[in-house]
Image (tube, rainbow, N blue to C red; front, side, top):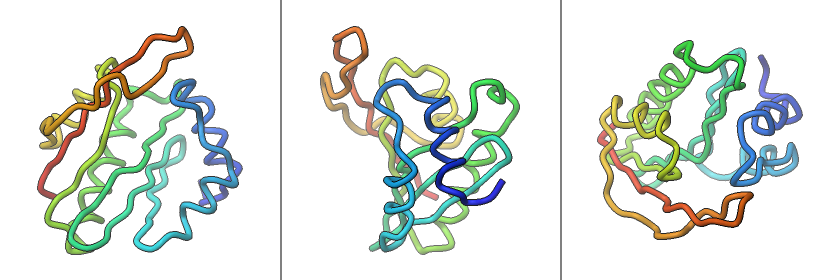
Length: 138
């Protein structure tokens, strides 16, 4: 798969209902920001940013039909490699507290919870879910 923002947005739409998926325009704009990088697999992608000794995982999306096939793990390993290559000493991310699969993936790659943003995400049903902040050494 190429870095075509339309294709990336289609995967993001399939992967997320909340928070709302990103548009092709938003993805294209984000990829032009300083330090931004893209890691692409056939049915998934990850956007990160590395600057000033830190790396942030901005989004990772895997098409629902392609989940549990190691794509997310390869993307995350690529993120940590890219962070290390960019000189990052810390990598961080945030994830919804009810996303058990993502929490397990991140923990399996050395990320640990550092804080929470209480009630940060609003679900389609109107309830609130905490954002879990996690960090690791790349």
